[in-house]
Amino acid sequence: MPQSTTTDLIVQSLHVSRFGTYARAAGGDMKLALRLYLWNLDLAAAFHSCLSVTEVLLRNAMDAQLRTWNAAQARADGGTFPAEWLDDAAKPLHSLTSGARSTARVNAGKARAARPTEHPRKHEPITHDDVLAQLTFGVFVRLLPTTDVDDKTHRGRQVLWDEALAQAFPGAKDDPEGKIIASRVGRIHALRNRVAHMEPLLEVNVKARHRDMIQIVGAIDPRLQGWFASVSQLHEVVRRRPTT
Image 1: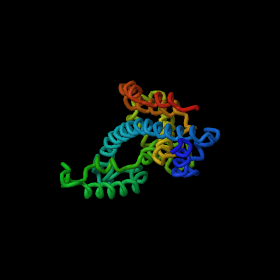
Image 2: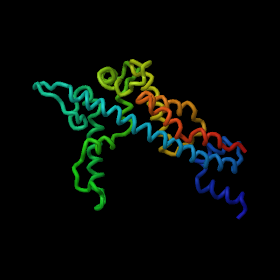
Image 3: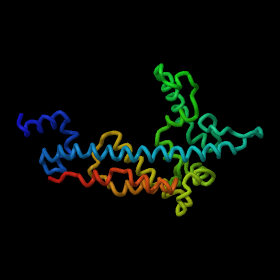
Image 4: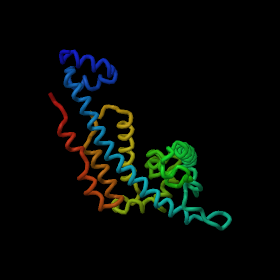
């Protein structure tokens, strides 16, 4: 089959509506458009690796501080809340996460039921970490401070930052109110959604988003920043972007 015919067949199979962005970027050159499409897959894979590490580090750092904070909150009866905030959260964490916590517990139960027979934890009960793993990235984004003073969660999010979450980012000395961290996390959350939905990334500012992730990792633990930057494949993938 001639190469041009093969290209046409692939484009038709991928559907013109999905391929339009690449065709426009290639000035109508469908062979270049196909190369851009395949390059976009490589870029998405490189982003996914960086995003996955960033998300896990962020989730664990925030969870550690929320556990400490929750266990220090007093109940009306004189007792205290448990460290396991996903089971029983104090205000304002309770209202900020109530729906998400319920959904995560249901999903953790489904994941437990789906464990294969040979799974080492086949009959083990659901743990805090099991539920934590089911929380979406967006949950943690919405726990960080917001600059929107009209947002009904504004006050609660700032309280959590001041009393707990600022300590999850000891490397962010220049960000006492958490606004810079929140902006960076918000941007990579938006990027994560684009990557997850296999959307075109041709117009993404790769260097800026990579810098966001490096800065977030450094804010969590400065000792990990250099390692994170060194294992990223983003710069190499960007260098390979097809132009002809």
